[in-house]
Image 1 (cartoon, one colour):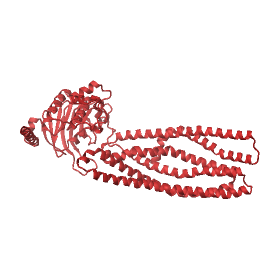
Image 2 (cartoon, helix red, strand yellow):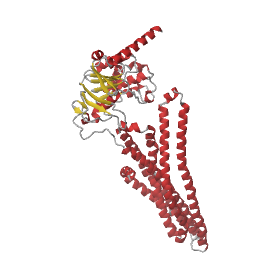
Image 3 (tube, rainbow, N blue to C red):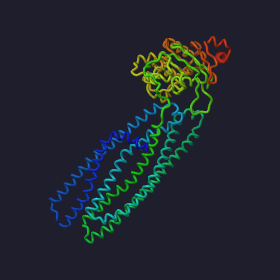
Image 4 (cartoon, rainbow, N blue to C red):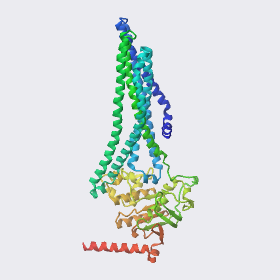
Length: 589
């Protein structure tokens, strides 16, 4: 089974520790089974006046020694087995996170954050229980069952043992049904928790939209439905456990009753001694745990296997974008010369028309290219393809004379600095956010990048300056400040290729002009691609590409495009009219 092989790949590393833990557990169980026998011997010795004070002290010392062995043994098995399970949980979590980082954008487009989070928390906890407590419970119950049964047969009476054990056999038949039912119900419970987690995650992430549209009641109702579903699935598990445990108690109680009746009969007729009768009752009490442990083991195994299945599902997902056989390891850096040959791309798993088609373009190293177009014209798609977040047909994208797939992914993305439309900032200091892409960046370098992005003065106005911690996704600073912080992060990287995807939309025109002037200085001799909606942002680029419905509509300089009286000129006239109306509105005020 795939799940067992996956878990085994981790457990194998810790087999010596597990063996030490199991050895300590065996010692504890072995010593434990001697205590009722010693109690019985003391009872018979006292009843028959065959024990003196020295004999009693000797037996008491033996009990104390056994207690010491049990104490040390329990510490050892907990340390080795529980410790190993915790370490395996940590390694699994690290490997899951590393694997998620390798997966392509396509995976995240079809999997919800809340579901992934629940697998990191609930499912890994269940797997830890499977590899820790379940191992202990299974081995402990098996060993105790064998040792106690042996003591009952050898020390007391085979006949009494058979009578006492007959009701316990019923548990085996119940376990078959219980295991299958528990597996189904626990899997449903975990799925329900994933849905609930996702509901909370989306609501918290979109709280501004919820408040702006006064949809608190609607979201509360949706949460209540998910919460009720989670409750019902949890109750399904609890109901099954609540049914099984009393039945186990009833079976064990029946065994105890038979022991009292038949064992009393044997003691009255002298077939066993009073001490043996007392010891046997103690052994029956010791059998309660193994019998109840059967149900616990089935529960833990069912839950653990269900969780393992969900974890393995993540590991079985393969990244779409990988370094293939054509990758050339000799390519260690980029210069920035970009050539697009009939670039055509359709997003996978969609029935839509191509997002881009027939793009033929050459961007020489060190030049600047501006990309303009209406919403949905394919601008961001082009940026994603250059970063190879999605794959294209071979030869459609050539960088520095190399087919894009020949360039190692690490080199490609290291040598491209990217400012996306979604200006994501981590819940960290501003300095750490700017320095995110450059290991070991100094404060002076961070400050220089911030000045180039025209965010330095704003940062110095914050109470803690560069050590100011921004909220989740940069929620505690303005949109323009987030954009400029993202630009500073990209400028600090100083990559041969820079892509700005509508990165100046939230700044005023004066700040925009200063940033563009700084870009000319900082990006001299490096390739820069600027995606924008405002022509004022891009009019000084070496070349301007106008996209329309995924295709090339116009290409040229600002002056050449203005002379065409096409889409570019139309956008220019519209934006100039808007600017004029805004100025007139300001004068009227």
